[in-house]
Image (cartoon, rainbow, N blue to C red; front, side, top):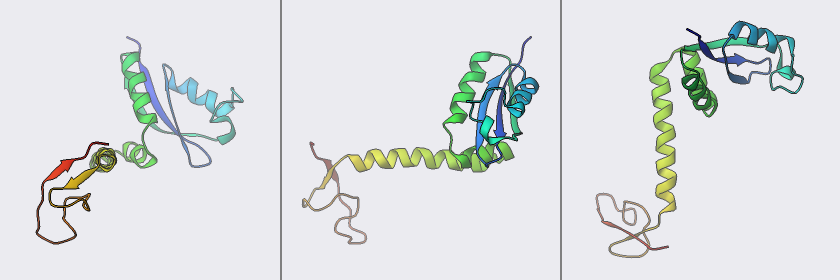
Length: 136
Protein backbone atom coordinates (compact mmCIF):
# COMPACT_ATOMS: atom_id res chain seq x y z
CA UNK A 1 0.00 0.00 0.00
CA UNK A 2 1.37 3.40 -0.98
CA UNK A 3 1.82 6.14 1.62
CA UNK A 4 1.48 9.88 1.21
CA UNK A 5 2.87 12.57 3.46
CA UNK A 6 2.01 16.09 4.46
CA UNK A 7 5.07 17.92 5.74
CA UNK A 8 5.99 21.29 7.16
CA UNK A 9 9.44 22.74 6.67
CA UNK A 10 11.01 25.49 8.75
CA UNK A 11 12.87 27.77 6.35
CA UNK A 12 16.04 29.72 7.10
CA UNK A 13 14.06 32.99 7.28
CA UNK A 14 11.77 31.53 9.97
CA UNK A 15 8.77 30.99 7.68
CA UNK A 16 6.98 27.68 7.23
CA UNK A 17 6.37 25.77 4.02
CA UNK A 18 3.67 23.08 3.84
CA UNK A 19 3.62 20.42 1.14
CA UNK A 20 2.43 16.95 0.18
CA UNK A 21 4.43 14.11 -1.38
CA UNK A 22 4.67 10.35 -1.70
CA UNK A 23 8.42 10.31 -0.86
CA UNK A 24 9.23 12.84 1.83
CA UNK A 25 12.96 12.02 2.01
CA UNK A 26 13.47 12.67 -1.72
CA UNK A 27 11.28 15.76 -1.51
CA UNK A 28 13.27 17.13 1.43
CA UNK A 29 16.52 16.54 -0.49
CA UNK A 30 15.00 18.36 -3.47
CA UNK A 31 14.13 21.34 -1.27
CA UNK A 32 17.64 21.35 0.23
CA UNK A 33 19.32 21.27 -3.20
CA UNK A 34 17.06 23.98 -4.58
CA UNK A 35 16.07 21.93 -7.63
CA UNK A 36 13.37 24.44 -8.56
CA UNK A 37 14.79 27.99 -8.60
CA UNK A 38 11.34 29.60 -8.61
CA UNK A 39 10.09 27.54 -5.67
CA UNK A 40 9.30 29.22 -2.35
CA UNK A 41 11.94 27.27 -0.44
CA UNK A 42 14.80 27.79 -2.91
CA UNK A 43 15.60 31.30 -1.64
CA UNK A 44 14.96 30.24 1.97
CA UNK A 45 17.45 27.39 2.37
CA UNK A 46 18.46 25.51 4.38
CA UNK A 47 15.14 24.02 5.41
CA UNK A 48 14.37 21.71 8.31
CA UNK A 49 11.60 19.11 8.49
CA UNK A 50 9.51 19.95 11.58
CA UNK A 51 6.26 18.06 10.95
CA UNK A 52 5.29 14.91 9.07
CA UNK A 53 1.91 13.16 8.82
CA UNK A 54 1.30 10.02 6.79
CA UNK A 55 -1.85 9.06 4.88
CA UNK A 56 -2.91 6.01 2.91
CA UNK A 57 -5.22 8.03 0.65
CA UNK A 58 -3.82 10.84 -1.51
CA UNK A 59 -7.11 12.76 -1.33
CA UNK A 60 -6.95 12.82 2.47
CA UNK A 61 -3.35 14.01 2.30
CA UNK A 62 -4.18 16.80 -0.15
CA UNK A 63 -7.17 17.88 1.94
CA UNK A 64 -5.01 18.03 5.09
CA UNK A 65 -2.28 19.98 3.27
CA UNK A 66 -4.79 22.54 1.98
CA UNK A 67 -6.30 22.92 5.44
CA UNK A 68 -2.94 23.40 7.18
CA UNK A 69 -1.76 25.87 4.51
CA UNK A 70 -4.64 28.21 5.46
CA UNK A 71 -3.72 28.14 9.14
CA UNK A 72 -2.03 30.95 11.02
CA UNK A 73 1.56 30.67 12.11
CA UNK A 74 0.39 30.07 15.70
CA UNK A 75 -1.81 27.14 14.72
CA UNK A 76 1.01 25.59 12.66
CA UNK A 77 3.38 25.92 15.62
CA UNK A 78 0.84 24.31 17.95
CA UNK A 79 0.51 21.41 15.49
CA UNK A 80 4.28 21.05 15.16
CA UNK A 81 4.73 21.00 18.95
CA UNK A 82 1.77 18.68 19.51
CA UNK A 83 0.04 21.29 21.70
CA UNK A 84 -3.48 20.06 21.05
CA UNK A 85 -5.17 22.24 23.67
CA UNK A 86 -3.53 25.37 22.24
CA UNK A 87 -4.53 24.31 18.75
CA UNK A 88 -8.12 23.87 19.94
CA UNK A 89 -8.11 27.33 21.56
CA UNK A 90 -6.66 28.96 18.44
CA UNK A 91 -9.28 27.23 16.30
CA UNK A 92 -12.04 28.47 18.60
CA UNK A 93 -10.66 32.01 18.35
CA UNK A 94 -10.72 31.79 14.55
CA UNK A 95 -14.40 30.77 14.61
CA UNK A 96 -15.20 33.49 17.15
CA UNK A 97 -13.58 36.16 14.95
CA UNK A 98 -15.65 35.02 11.97
CA UNK A 99 -18.86 35.10 14.01
CA UNK A 100 -18.02 38.54 15.44
CA UNK A 101 -17.33 39.96 11.98
CA UNK A 102 -20.69 38.63 10.76
CA UNK A 103 -22.45 40.08 13.78
CA UNK A 104 -20.79 43.47 13.25
CA UNK A 105 -21.97 43.54 9.65
CA UNK A 106 -25.62 43.12 10.70
CA UNK A 107 -27.24 46.36 11.90
CA UNK A 108 -29.43 46.20 14.98
CA UNK A 109 -31.61 48.78 16.66
CA UNK A 110 -32.77 48.96 20.23
CA UNK A 111 -36.40 48.27 21.00
CA UNK A 112 -36.56 51.57 22.89
CA UNK A 113 -34.50 53.92 20.69
CA UNK A 114 -32.38 54.17 17.55
CA UNK A 115 -29.01 54.81 19.27
CA UNK A 116 -28.03 51.26 20.23
CA UNK A 117 -26.08 48.75 18.21
CA UNK A 118 -24.99 46.31 20.92
CA UNK A 119 -26.58 44.26 23.70
CA UNK A 120 -26.25 46.82 26.48
CA UNK A 121 -28.57 49.79 26.13
CA UNK A 122 -26.77 53.17 26.46
CA UNK A 123 -24.10 51.60 28.67
CA UNK A 124 -26.49 51.20 31.59
CA UNK A 125 -25.40 48.09 33.52
CA UNK A 126 -28.03 45.47 34.09
CA UNK A 127 -30.49 46.85 31.55
CA UNK A 128 -31.58 44.30 29.00
CA UNK A 129 -33.11 44.84 25.62
CA UNK A 130 -34.41 42.89 22.71
CA UNK A 131 -32.63 43.43 19.44
CA UNK A 132 -34.52 43.92 16.23
CA UNK A 133 -32.72 43.45 12.97
CA UNK A 134 -32.80 46.53 10.76
CA UNK A 135 -33.29 46.19 7.04
CA UNK A 136 -30.21 47.47 5.15
